[in-house]
Length: 155
Image: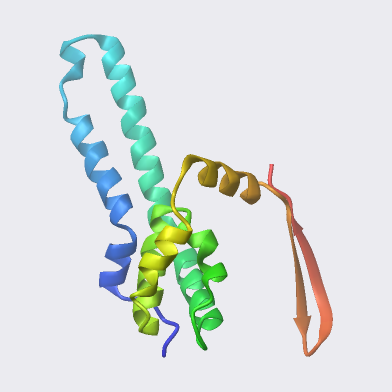
C-alpha cells in the first residue's frame, strides 16, 4: 500500500471542480453582456475574476491534497475509522479525496455509509467554517521529547 497520490489522472480527478470553474469563467467571459448594459459587464468581470481566483486556489492545493491522502492512508491502514474522514466529507473536494483513499484501501463500499453519516447540510458547512477559524497549536515530538511548538493564528 503506497501513500503516493501523484498521478496525472488523480490530479485531474481531484481538481474537477477547478476545471469546471475555469471553463465556466471562460464561458461567461465570452457572453456579450456589454451590449445589454455596461453594469452587466461590470458584474460579468467580477464573476469571471472570482471564478478564476477560486479555480487557481483549488489547483494550488495539490500539495495539501497529497499530504491529506498520506495522513488518511496512514490512519486507516489497519481498518476504516469513520471519524478520520469527517473533516474531508464536509467539502466536495474532500469527498473526492475520500473516494480515492477508500478505493486504495479496498473499502469502496464504506463511502455510502460515510456519505450518510456526514451529509452536506448548511449547518454542517457553517460548523466546519467556525471550526477552521479557531487557532490551532502544533507540538512536535522527536524520540519522545518535545522539540517545537507553534500556534497558528488565523484572523
